[in-house]
Length: 516
Image (cartoon, rainbow, N blue to C red; front, side, top):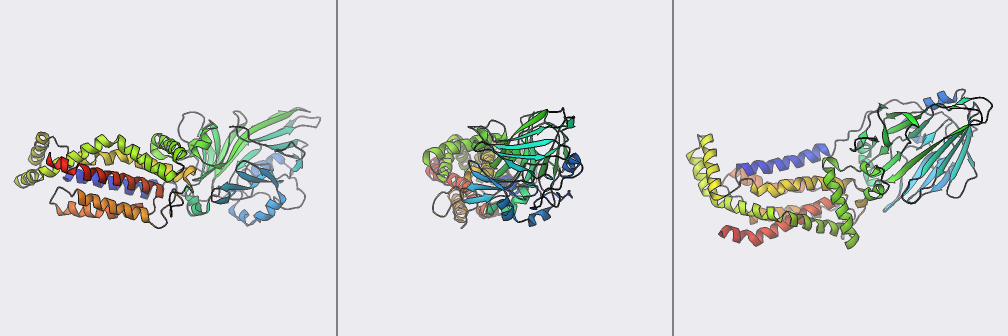
């Protein structure tokens, strides 16, 4: 190992440090923004107190209430709300605004409450009005309310179909004998989403208000507080594992505004209703886990809310491969092990070339030492002589670290796939590893991985007498072990398996290459 290889290894460690120290924490909790409160009687049991100006009241409630609303008794709200069963969750719809004030998602490890703040509730409309439940077909919740100007509002929650999303249908009718304006009413999502217990500590660092641009085919756009410009295929709020989103029809809404904590408000276009006329808005929505394959089946771009990072084009096929393998072996951990063997098989020619290069560099070390002594005061001459020596011997000074460099995109892509994909949340492997998306609770995997890396160093000691390089190689297993202590167990399992395969190849081919 020469100085070029030392720099390559140092760069790899720097990439790791940069990734865990900066990239993983790229979501910074936004500063709190002052936002108007909902009407005081929002969740009281008193009759609705209709404001004098319905349109103005709707505009005033277009942004989320302050965090103090969390003091509201969620159990009391749930007792006043109506149950709306869904495939993976139970929603509670409250009469004020006909909004979702509770969503109990049936997680693999227990029920999870997704509604972070019940006021105004998810998918609220006209939160200043108290709706009354109406008769409806089975599986449908229907509510009605009347505005002070006489307009009648009907809001329905329609169930999902096969590979189709559930819908919110809002119908505004004019039973009067004069024309009425529909008004710029709002549909709101947020503030924020809650999550599974072991993610609550980081939830406020990763939750977002976001939307998928209608054109461009890129990732979703994370919103900063304020008005949002452009057309969006869907809009909503999310965190690492869950998403609440709506998919408005083109032309139904003409303004989008976001706030902090993550909150999105859609402002409907103002229409004029003739006497006896009505206007209907059909709004598909999603409220649940961010399972990539689950969301992809809708073919609406919702799966793009799963964050695969800068190597998303590699992370997505890796996750699909894991799905395929898991479907055949029935265990995510063993699927990761098998996938590692497949990746190492693809990299085998490069690995063999790397081992050959390292063996050649080791044989050349005495000659390199002589050149370093001879031209110690002539750096330019030293480099040219060393390059000539490499050329004659057919050695590549960077060949030894090429497989490591090529694995970096796979490592980063797999990190995001394991860290942010719902499919791997709560997925067990063996014995003590009950969640491959979380750290090893007893640190067994990272410690064993460090031991394997130490054994690798002993099997293939550095071809140099430089004490600095030897010290660095000695401490590298310790550095990696510390970095991997809080890394998802599935990722440590991948790196451990990869290290074991590399060690086996070194043991099997070392003598052959050294004798060549």
